[in-house]
Length: 286
Image 1 (cartoon, rainbow, N blue to C red):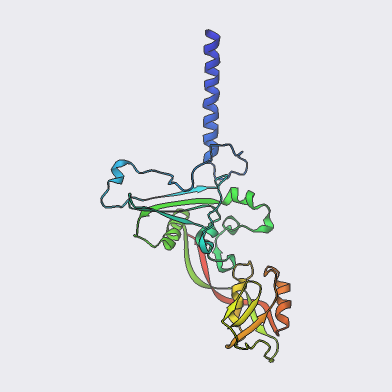
Image 2 (spheres, helix red, strand yellow; image 1 turned 90 degrees about the horizontal axis):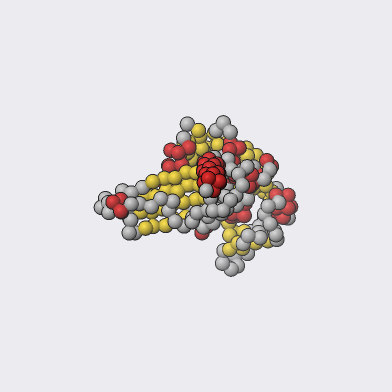
């Protein structure tokens, strides 16, 4: 009996040690060296992290709210919503609350909500590499484990614009400010290389374009739409060409700037990189 009691005590102490060791690991913001052990880091993304108690649910003024900001969560995919947004919104009409949430994103992706390119975001911070992933710096997963975050906000339904409340709450938590301001940055400038008009539309058919560089009876500045989701600098049309155009650039991808410029060449068009003052999303440390 004495030996059995001793064995039970040893097992209990081991369990306590493991529990506190795991608890300590679960609190660190850099999880790059932490083994993924089910079910410690698992949770249900579609459900709120915190449940309101009965007294709160009976609150007739419907002012229930909380915000939650954590580090990277293993095994959780970022949200991919309509039009490229990286957050989701669900309403609980019984509680009168709206839940906004996003998972495993950089600070830049949180502020842009998936709608703006990196080239339109300007950081005035001491260490921008902590806010934005650079593919030249190595594995994205390793970077995300150190710098990725999750965010959840519950607030009363209909009280605040969900797009702006995300930035407002992130600014408060991270001690940042944001605004749209002009900055001198590199830009891709569309120019004409001759006075010959090789792009004038025949005026046939409905205005349309696709993602492979086919333009029919549409304005030339829509070339910027092809570049919008790329990592290229911001696009500016300086051709001063006002009429509709017909183009068939026959592009398989818009990720290669050299091939894009080559396709434009037959229409006496070119993209040149120069400095311009452009309206940017400016994020500053306070």
